[in-house]
Length: 180
Image (cartoon, rainbow, N blue to C red; front, side, top):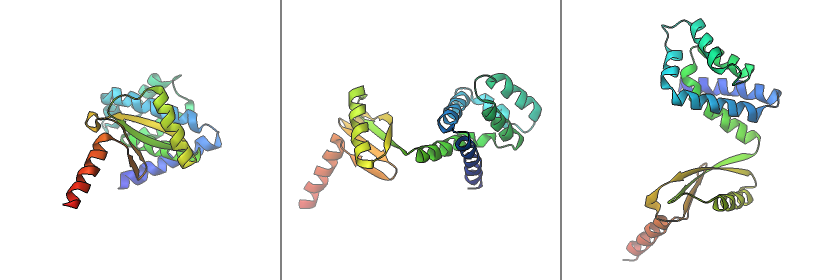
């Protein structure tokens, strides 16, 4: 709980800096890029979180890895996380920042699960329909689940729209059992 509160504070601070500099999208992309780098090299994050390693060595490594790849502001932010021993919160910070940024820009993220990969035209159709319904810009996060058989399941926040064959079969089964 404490870690989540700390992550919120750091995310909010980065978000406010991004708003002041009018770089919500740019800093969001940089945070996502760093998160991807940490995920592809988990030993790097472990090294940065290790309390036995000097902070100056960690910051020097960050400089070598990210100088020219990310903005100076973002590099300073990473160094701050190292100084405060909060680098292990980075993934949560990035997620909270993304949510704050999306809310500020009127973007809602929809998780769309389908049985098979969706064609670009299908994705655009779903995006357009959801934008029309919500009145916001919609970004899709695509997932696959062969057990759906066909159709899609859409999740936006706490709302769930089940248009899958599996969902229809379950609904039909429940109705048939209720009638007996």
